[in-house]
Amino acid sequence: GEFVKGFIPNSLFIGLNGTFAMWVGALIEDINQKIVLIVPEGKEEEAVTRLSRVGYDNTVGYLKGGVHTYANAGGDLKTITSISGFELAEKYGDVNIVDIRKPGEYDSEHVVDAMSYPLDYMNENIDTLDKDKTYHVHCAGGYRSVIGISLLMKNGYKHLIDVAGGFGALHETNIPKTNYVCPSTLK
Image 1 (cartoon, rainbow, N blue to C red):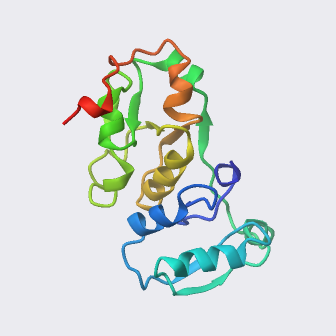
Image 2 (image 1 turned 180 degrees about the vertical axis):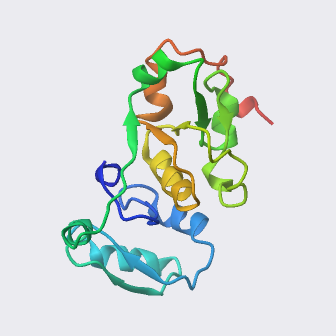
């Protein structure tokens, strides 16, 4: 939740409270990539340890005091606009919806007319969206969408809106969804 309110331009969000190691491995392709951490105070050591556990030993340091230090030094923070599932449902039909869940999750059930653009393969497909269009991005619960939006913004996309709560939140709305198919029956 903190990242969307203000982050350093070109930084990549991978939250410590989610499947951190997996997303680091999937999205930071060069294991020798130099990394500067921006973490909540007191979490620096944990982040370095968890990175080195998966082979990322090139953490060069962390920003003391985190994002506030950057802002206090006059740095411009970027933010991510976030809307609720109900707000998206009200706009449905006039917006581009991008579902970044895994292909199996999408195939099982998705918002009608949503585009499948899995986070797992986003690096390889980074130029397939239109940088002039606005996209409403969702995952299953809201963690991956912020990762995806940070990656897209780092690559020059500007018109991105996060759907808070992801597909779980959209399920509570009357937005049209495909019929549910049990994942085990999908080949």
